[in-house]
Amino acid sequence: MTGFDYVVVGGGSAGCVLAARLSEDPSLSVCLLESGPSDWHPAIHVPIGLLWMMRSPGMNWNLNTHPEPALAGRRLFWPRGKVLGGSSSSNAMCYIRGHAADYDGWAAQGCTGWSFQEVLPYFRRAEHQERGEDPYHGVGGPLNVADLRTPNVLSKAFVEAGVQAGFPHNTDFNGAQQDGVGLFQVTQKDGARCSAAKAYLTPVRQRPNLTVITGAQATRILLSTTATGAPKASGVAYRKGGQEQVVQARCEVLLAAGAIFSPQLLMLSGIGDRVALQAQGIACLAHLPGVGQNLQDHLDVMVVQASRQPVSYNLGLRNLLKSPWYLLRYLMRRDGMLSTNGAEACGFIKSAPDEVIPDLQFHFTPAKLKDHGRNLRFLTGQGFSLHVCNLRPKSRGRVALASTDPAQPPRIEANYLDHPDDLRRMIRGVRHARQILSQAAMAPYGGAEVLPGPAVQSDAEVEHFIRQHAETIYHPVGTCRMGVDALAVVDPALKVRGVDGLRVVDASIMPTLVGGNTNAPTIMIAEKAVDLIRQERQRVG
Image 1: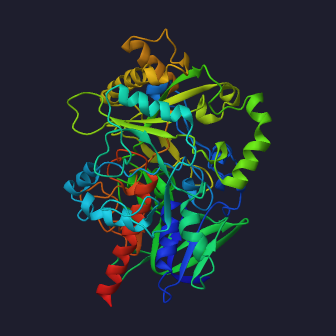
Image 2 (image 1 turned 45 degrees about the horizontal axis):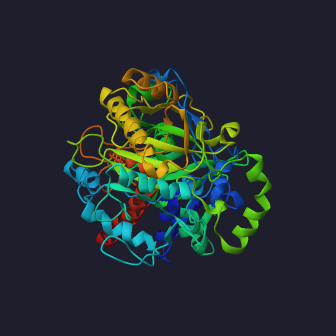
Image 3 (image 1 turned 90 degrees about the vertical axis):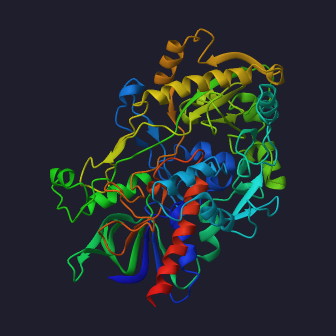
């Protein structure tokens, strides 16, 4: 049985930050457990490889929701990274933090220390902004943030069309103002993906006080009893190569397995709702009824058009014949089609004039997409897609145990569109998307609308289209919610309530979804957690 000061469970975005930052102190020993393999595969590092990573059986969990009642009973595909770097090794590399009001909202709910001005230093600490330093951006951090090297002409036309539709041009969605349309900045360096693993872990893998164990599926958190009778996390049991093994944690266990697997592991360890655990035959060691509750995600639907000009990304014969040229260009210049992040342009807009802050986000992709890019026949041919998502859904779902076998995924009930306000905003979003795509800047390119299609016009018809076609945009959060009320799972220091020596540090602690992509906020959460740990160590000695 091996022992370390800190055991980090999950080598995704948060886990990589925790392992790298904590091991900066040579007096501490740190162990990182990751279920998937190391991030060796070229498809991780060549940005367009995300199309392969989206379906890779060895590096993607390939989850599915329970049938969704409001989405025609469909089981939605939820890809999650199963590799060092987690989903930052397979996502679209969009660098977005959310709106300042999101974090001020957390603080207003009792999450002391989490207002925007209090978390901004951690965004800046994580970042190396290639444009340079300013009050909102940092330089010298591990995570490289860059402009796209060769954005597609369609992406530039979309930005121009958004301005023509009346929205401001925004060159920095993470600066003083989020509103507007513009090109994404991406987590890339020299045209290659800069995942959390590449940014934080790769440079420090040889530290003698850092142990990284891949292919290690955590099966439960080991709990002992303190002198006061409270449970205390003392280690982690995991399965590797068919063998059960145990690693001890002298100081703390840091659970960073994400919004799906962090609550699952807590429940498998006897931490959760007493009645639900007993129904699974699990002894409840800490009654926390909020574990697995409060699941939130950004639901997304696409308006897709054909292109009149052969300028989009596609898998047709014309483009496949150019593959050697694309590869040679990428190897020599690190730009071109292989360097695309897929979703090149962005928009944050208000669905109605009375909205105080943007409540809709657009992702523009210069390609025809369907079913997460898994429908290769649909990808063939010229076209472009405009994703529409409601940024702050009011619907809430849950993650529950489907089995006591840790190798089996939990039951995911996203409960999309349960609240009627969510559907109203998405209908307005589709109309705004069509308005932008109808502007003069898109006229040289825009052909027939493929989805929803010209026959879909009334609110009822758009609603039916959304229920039949909407999918996740990959931002599940909230299932180990931070707060101060009875349903909070962790406190503002990210400590699991009622359990010593255990914190949750990942997107599951978000009380509410931020208005944007969730990877940068997850990295911020881990950066702040490291400071919380260090401050506590200083206080106690």
